[in-house]
Image 1: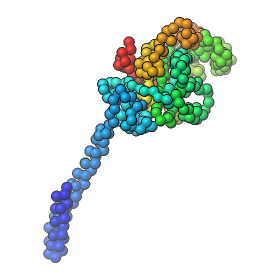
Image 2 (image 1 turned 135 degrees about the vertical axis):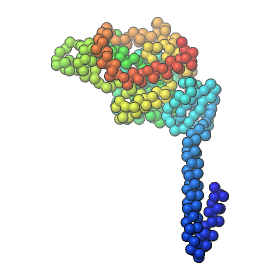
Image 3 (image 1 turned 180 degrees about the horizontal axis):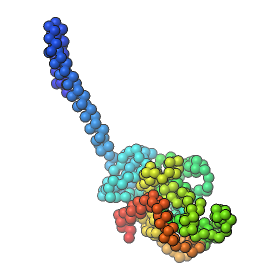
Length: 381
């Protein structure tokens, strides 16, 4: 590049003076033409150089820390910065600027360390066994002097304000979507999901008949839902089967919040989450990847074992409590089961419902595959 610029410098004065006095226009044109070509070549070289810098920039400075040191214990990385975390056999690579844990290698789990300001957030998706898990984790963490909060219905802003202003070790549980947190370290998010058809079936018959717990709140809810169903059917108080509800497009069975519950809860509170789009799916995946672990209702006990292995200082003993027949927490499993016998779907209703729930099954299968890979890595069988 320096040689080219010197060459231009040497040529320019000579050709300028020579052609001014002699009028040799041909040589002047050749000089200018040659100069333009050289300038263009220099510019192209510069552009290519900067393009190479831009393309290779992400791989130049990963921050590698030992996986044994833990995601939240790295002294080399600001605690308030979101990271992508991927774990190989002996190391974890952190990249700045993201709020999710993106899987770039086969490993999905990481070691976590608790401190005096640890936050655990349980996203309770209805009819997934969330009450049972809530009671188990609450029982466990209260013994470890955690402040436990069951968030009551309120505005989204009120919930976020309350959550973000809590100090110390806290456990939050709520029927509430994923939110952006303002704590120095990200929380440990846990949750359960269930096969979409099975979850909708359980939700429907619970809404119409209640469960074995027979609490005043449940009975009041059932009364309200039956009244709405009768109104939708023109005053007919006979409770339809779920198949009839689906085939007749009754309000309960066309409500997006009930049909796409997993997407709704894990996408978060962005207004765009109400649309079934690729953005919604990708945002949901991002938040799931940022969670400590999302398990399956169908594999409830395995999920408890996964939690025990991921954070033994908090969750060790969950399986023992769950399997203990005399424990109050174990009894909740029976109490929260839907009371009424669930009528199997007719082929027509099932076909229609499966078609409607394609996006919900897409995210469910993503979680299912991810959970099975996590179980395999942890040796939970």
